[in-house]
Image 1 (cartoon, rainbow, N blue to C red):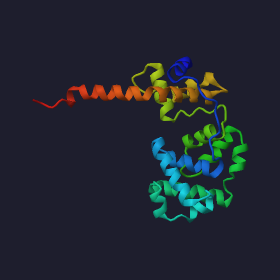
Image 2 (spheres, helix red, strand yellow; image 1 turned 90 degrees about the vertical axis):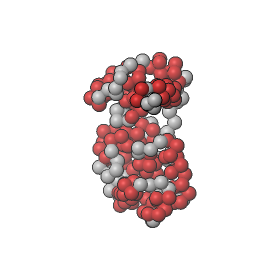
Image 3 (cartoon, helix red, strand yellow; image 1 turned 120 degrees about the vertical axis):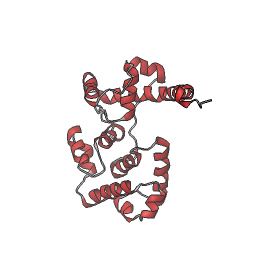
Image 4 (tube, one colour; image 1 turned 180 degrees about the vertical axis):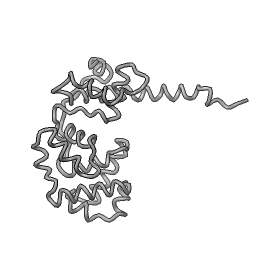
Length: 207
């Protein structure tokens, strides 16, 4: 399976820890929830310009209008301020989280409102470069495996979990390879889907 990922996308780059880590790294993942990579990047640049050094106190001091101008929805404002308050109060010690085993770190992170399992796993995988994280709730992982398996629909979650078991303790590499494949394949598949939709009978105007 993985040779197809490399054939489609070329060599896989060595993982490099994404910066920043700690509070700003987790805050950035909140921004990335349910938006495109390009949109999240634009939001991040605006936030950095508005807040300066991204400390919990700096984020807590930003008014609603500033956060809204940075692209925050009302829900993400609540999540961002909740995370900032957890870290500022000491209830969430990001340095301690970074030293915890995977399961303990995930448990500590998902206690925070707005940090679900996907966000916690992405933090461990991309920011901390943990080697055995398998983010089955990630859409690109699910769709990439659907394509690799030749399925008409995405595999159910329990099957995705089971698919990763043989790749322990290197499931992070497996996830990166599936992402690699997805990013290489997605543009062509989207073009094909648009072309098929244009020819579909329900898109043809009646004479």
